[in-house]
Image 1 (cartoon, one colour):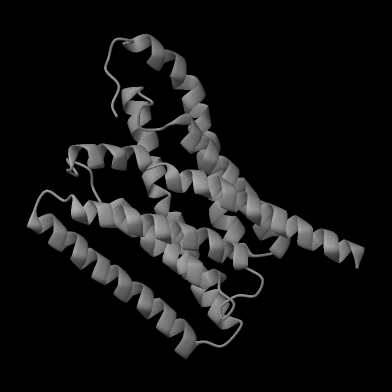
Image 2: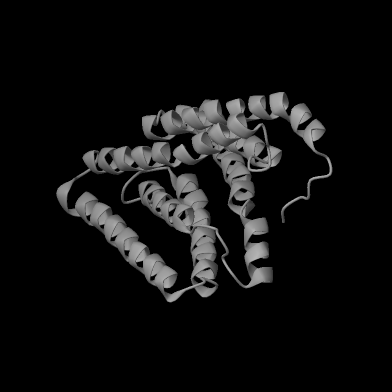
Length: 231
């Protein structure tokens, strides 16, 4: 009984820590949206990453709900929070879009996103019983999470090419590493392949980003201290 209690506490602690570190990641676009609000324009910023993040959070939220998976509530809470943040960012993008064409594009992509999520949810409920439902949604959520790591890879490529850390803030990389590490532990404790594998990739990427930051930070500071800062 004591060991079970310790196990439950360990699971909760790892999942709760992952939720806290994820909150820092969800707040990372705030400077961008402060700039949009100040300019009353989306300028050259692209809303697609926030739409893709919304889809990813929605699928992972579905995976964490009781009618798909047991004892995965902390997966649902972190992704529910993430989905709320992405919806807020997308709404601001829509309000301050520079043209009707951009608004139509955002609306069309959002409709496609909703249809895609609805298809996954409907198929999981009508075509699969437990435990196949959890395996189906888990596989989709894992593929979605892994595809989301394309963005950090692209940013790392920019850092290597330009030797500039402007687009890879230290605290964002640190939050990625800490959040992914927490969910790797959470996934291992639950013996959930669909949680610890994609987050294991997140640990590798977060550690690599911090390594790049350590390597290029000195060069970047020395390059042109008189250059104006964005934001």
